[in-house]
Image (cartoon, rainbow, N blue to C red):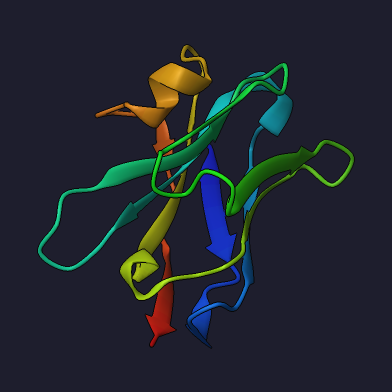
Length: 125
């Protein structure tokens, strides 16, 4: 079975940066459409950034120009570089993977094949 493990969350001040990592066990990131999702308290989960097996990316409007999703195929790690963080970016961030969806589909996905357990990001003003 595939398992996804996120890391890199933490607490930073507004304007700061964090880099999230997602390490899969039981599979290769190059085989999947992958994405980062977040859920803030009292809000629905939303897609933040997604990447195709071929590297095509998609982003939510709220993070365009600030977040970058990328893959390191050699290390088999998915990243989310988050810059210029805002208090409204505070949420639990989840990594997810799917065998059958491209980046745009992943970004708007309700369901994915595999999910991580999340890493908490807290941005203070």
